[in-house]
Amino acid sequence: MSRKFLLCLIASLVATCYASPQIDQITPQALKPGATTILTFSGSSLADVTELWTSFGATAQRTTNSNPDQVSFEVECPSSACGIGALHQISPRGISNYQLVFVDSLPSEPPPANHHNLTNAQILNPPVSIDCILKNESIDYYKFHGTARQVFSIEVLAHRLGSQMDPVVKVLNASGTELFFCDDEGGTSRDSRFQFTCPGDGDYFLAVHDVGYGGGNAFDYRLRIGGFPLIWFTYPLEPIEDATPELFGLGIADEEQAYCNIEHRKGLLEQEPNNGTAQAQVFLPPALLNGKFQYSGDVDCYKFTAEKNQKLIFQGATRSLGSPADLVLRLTKEDSTLIKQGDLSGANEGSLTNTFGDGGNYYLQVRELSGVAGSNLPYQIEVRNAVPGFTLSCEDDKTHVAPGAETTLKIICTRFDYDGPITLELLPKPSRIDLENNTIAEKKNEVELKIKASDQCAPGFFAHFKIVGTAKTKLGPFTNDVSTAAALKKTFPLILYPNRLLDGLFSLAVKEK
Image 1 (cartoon, one colour):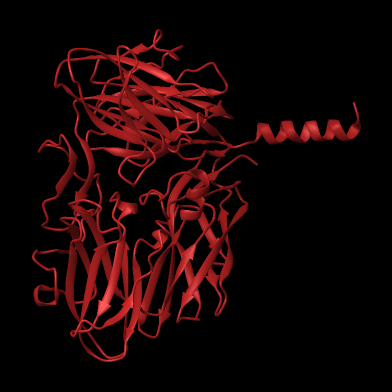
Image 2: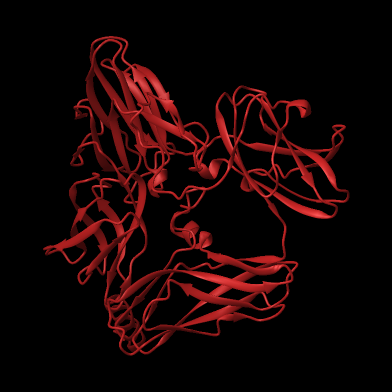
């Protein structure tokens, strides 16, 4: 054995011994609200994990587990939790990667061992959910019984939970004839979800596979089948003060929860008819407009007043909030003369910026790009003044530091009519954690923010915080949070829009020297 090889081996072993915990799999992939569930995590460097953090306020207690590559927690999920949440683990060696988990009221069954043909199909007794890891070039089969005209809601969560799987689901009859096929849901996700009505009494099969017949440990999914409602989206897309939400989808019941613990905002709800300038709905910038296209070809018109040389930003939001609509924004004068049409690229979700040379009344026309996208498609448009300021971003959302040492985060700044200094701070500020080099200098666009831990910070200490930038502009104080969207994109590369609750949330762990 060469000396070089031996040194590399030793370095590798040392790195492994001091590596942060890494989560690869969670079983099951869901928690039941108001109940305690044992979650088992598989990965590496899990032996000395001490705590489990969740984005939805669950309490967790570690249980005994003899496998060094596994760790289990008894997790008590709040009854108010819903939707998809995030979690990660903390140990004296650091903090783990994020994993996503579904809050699900359906009972869970353990994953089947072998169900890759119709003969060995896993028998399901709806309502039920089941977790599975798809094997390469395989199809998973499930069998259930239905009666004539019985309606089943069926969905696969994969893409939404960060899986590499792009699921396809087929419904077959007892002889193997295809009765229904579903690839992607209506334009917002790669996952499959639909309702199937049984044509008669008998047994039916589900065939589940990846669109490219891929498989492996990263191709995990959760199958759900039962009589539950399928909610495509809400209107408004986010909770608005004094607005009762409408739910759109299939089999929706009145008692369904519309929003998952999101702060209510002030906003304007669209009032029909508003299809032309004569019926335009009036608003005063800045404003948060909430509307929906009620039929194919629907055009919504809003009227507002702008001052001379006022610069306004119109920013749409649809797919990032669950709506399949693609917005086209147009600004016109009172005589319908076009001033400007917005950016049509999907990444911008419909955006437009304009400086008004003359003061007066103007109109914002909003339509769906295809014009034939169906009915009741909601959208949101934030109208705000373009003031001097900046945006901040970071390609990392977690960091580790030893007691008495320091770590750095590179903060990137994009400026808008402001060249002055920007001061960074942690909110809330963790105890015994201090900052150095926390000012982005005048006319500079980045800084290596230094985060220092006191000698009294013991390994295993962790904290969550936001990094906020503040500046004094010519129009007054301006603040903005540092976005971690780039880091979330690296963690969940197939999720088109990062989780808004995680964007801007940093994690710091104190690890052993």
